[in-house]
Amino acid sequence: MRPELINAAVLAYLGDSVFEMMVRDYLVKESGLVKLNDFQKEAIKYVSASSHAKFMHVMMDEGFFSDIEIGIYKRGRNTKESKKENLDHIHSTGFEAIIGTLYLEENYERLEMIFNRYKEYVNGK
Image (tube, rainbow, N blue to C red; front, side):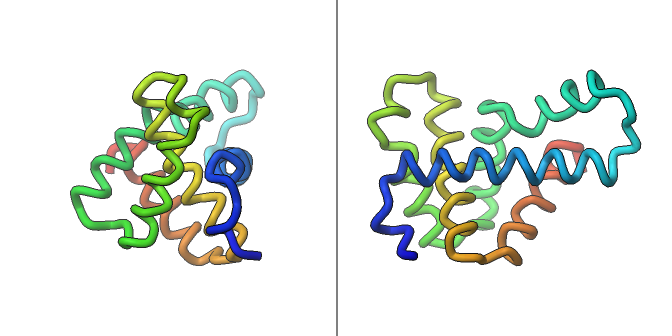
């Protein structure tokens, strides 16, 4: 599988579902929540385009992402589909493209590293 040959919008599509699964897995296993409505409310903090966009900006400023990952991010945010949306959605699409690429590359260690950092960011740590 060569993710660089796959349309960036498709990478973002896959990344969105992978990230959503990671969030749900985390919430079910570690949040202590029991009501479905509470899970849904909490998940919104993790999967919102605004959170993705802000996380990307902070982490790029910190140098957290590699040059290759930043290239994937830029490719993802410049898709035709993302240009139709608001600015947060454009940046979120780039973030999701990174997640989709790492998933296809089976780079689960890096996915976990990003997700752990993302949890810290969302939870204010």
